[in-house]
Amino acid sequence: MQATLEQLAHAVSAATDLEALSRPILELLEAVTGMESTYLTTVDLVAGQQHILYARNTRAMTIPEGLSVDWDDTLCKRALEEERPYTDDVPGIWGDSAAARALGIQTYLSHPMQRADGALYGTLCAASADRHRLQGETLNLLSLFARLIAHQVEREQAIIDLRRANESLSAESRIDALTGVINRRGLMPGLREKLQTAERHGHPVHVLFIDLDGFKAINDTHGHDVGDRFLIQVAQRLGDAVRAGDLVARYGGDEFVVVTTSAQPDALRDRLQRALSAPFEDRGLIIAPGGGSIGLTSAEAGEVDAERVLARADASMYLIKKTRRSARSH
Image (cartoon, rainbow, N blue to C red; front, side):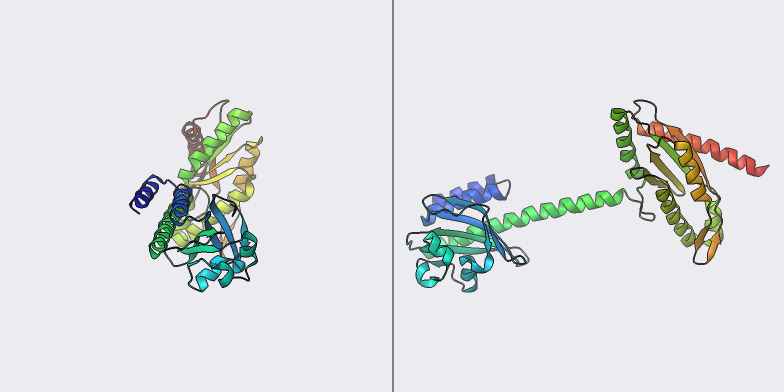
C-alpha cells in the first residue's frame, strides 16, 4: 500500500496533462487489482455515447482506445445506476450483456468521475476474464484515483476557459465598442500585416486618414446620442465603400483610417468622400454632413514601418483639412 501511494504521489507531481496522469494511474490500478484491462472513459450523455480515452491491456482481453459504444449498453451505466462499483460475477449479475459475454468479462470494477458541478465526465474502469476478490481498501484506492483524474480534468478545463476568456478580451480590446470596426489598437497590427504581405508579394498598400468635417456642429446642435449614431453610420458607409480584405478602423473621436491594396486609391478616396457627404437620416431628422478631409499616402516598396506610413497619411489629411478650412473662410 505504501509503495502504491508513493508511486501515485510521483505520478501526480510529474503529470503535466490528463494523459500524463491517467496512464500511470491505469498502471497502478492494474497492479493493485491484478485485472488485465484498465481504462478511462468519457461519457457524452447528450449523444448517448461512451468513449474509451486511454486503456492499458496486459493479457488476452483487449479494450481498445478510441472505441465508442452506446452508453445504454455499457456495464458502466449499469454499475452506476445499481450503485454496484464491483462484482466478480459478471455472468451472474449482468448475463444479458452481449459485450461482457464477447469479452469474457468475469470481474468488473467501475467508478464515475464527476465535474465540480456534479455532471458526469466519465468512468475509471477495470475488467478481467478471471475472478478477482477485491477488498474495500482497493475500492477506496479506485475512488481516490477517480477523484485525482477528475481534478485534473477540471484544472485543464479551467485553463481552456481562461485562455478563451483572454482571447475574447483581447479581441474585444481591438474593437471599437461604438461602431464595431477595429480601433487604434487593432489597426496597428493589421496595418503591419498588410505591409509585410505587400513586401512578400509586391502589391501596393495605401492608407487613407479621414477626419470628419463638421462633426462638432452635429454634436453641439443635436446632442451626443445623435452624434454617436452618426459615427455608427459613418463606419457602415466606409465598410460598404471598401473591398473585402480592406481595413476600416476608428482611430479616435471622429477620425477613421482605411487601409487598402486597391490599384486605384484615388478612386476609392472619391468614393469615400461621396459616402461621407450623403445626407444622414436619424429618426426623421435629416442632417447634411460636411464630408471629410481624407489624406492619402502609399507605402514605399519594402516599407514595413506602420507608424511611419500612418504618420504620413495623418500629415496629408491635416494639409487637406487646412486647405478646406481656408477655402470655406474666403
